[in-house]
Length: 211
Image 1: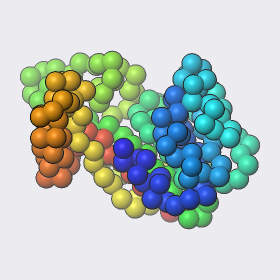
Image 2: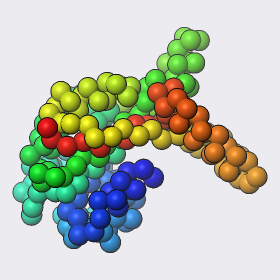
Image 3: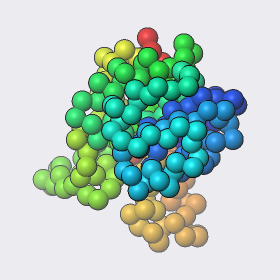
Image 4: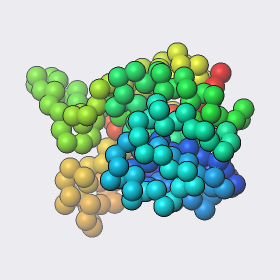
């Protein structure tokens, strides 16, 4: 998980704010590296499961929840698959700038609407929402690598890096997750993503800092 790797790369003794923490899947993994772990989650059932991993878990709307008050500013703010669910993500991004330490970073992931699967669907006149994935029916905004960068820059951030994740073919086709195909399929998906991230990338993970 790329977001996990990027959080852990920041070192130890971190103050982290996890937005949309769900059942705490990320929090469980980064907890040992955090002296202070806070989070906001809208879904009460998910928040109940994830809350034990946090020092300060907040259940409720993101824009209201981030107002705190928090114990301190953050080294890292994580927004994994969050902004696409908001009608005005720039409002949230503007508020987050003031919660970061001077050398703190914002880590966020956005689904790639220019992925090959969506492009092929459009060629054949299909743009069908689904229970999950790039065209999740709860998504209100759609992003490419360029428009994700533009959103950050227009919201007052300097983009430090952009990385693409590979299409999780094993989720759509469970048979591909079993040996001997699993390793071959994963390697092929990663190679294709490195070759053309804007075409084969499933998500883009941005690392940014207030400018």
